[in-house]
Length: 110
Length: 111
Image (cartoon, rainbow over all chains, first blue to last red; front, side):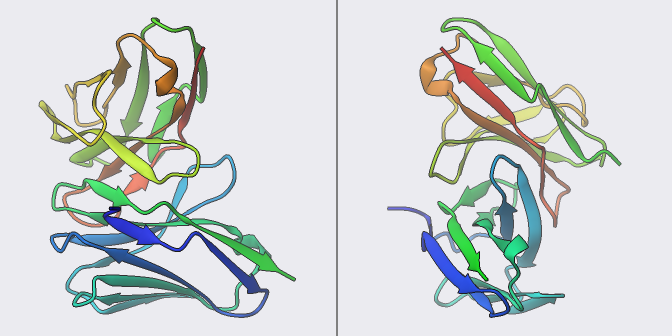
């Protein structure tokens, strides 16, 4: 099965909070990343967390890491229409090799 | 800093042709890697490098070669293009710890 799993779709109303979830199997992941991809564009690094941290907050973004359950989440506060995109989580080993989930399509409705 | 740059942005090849996708970074990052993205999928690792002169295979290396003669450059060579190599190719770089950045991608079509 997939080493990194994400739900495929999330619909959220403008102004609400979005929570995107990710589970991974490789416990040796040293960094866990969240990337945003808009149609036809490259991957924009949103945030990342080192594996010995539980939480990281960066403006509207909050990352939570539960190492015991191998669960990572990204919360976006006050979601805006510009947040509509595909969001990828990825785990990195110590050599920088990334394993990606298939991506979560987030649609923000007015 | 220009970050991670890739050329060309778009390329159309005929089956059997060869070409090199260029990737460069100006951040003095040790780690560089190549990924391909196919529709509806996450990215898959083709090859990676942990420093000049050191490369290794990723998940889907067949049909691709790499070399790393300098810290800045990490070209990806397609030896004999096949339609199955139609994809979007992304190069990434990272220091030995922390943020990992991607280039803008090369969209390759093989006819």
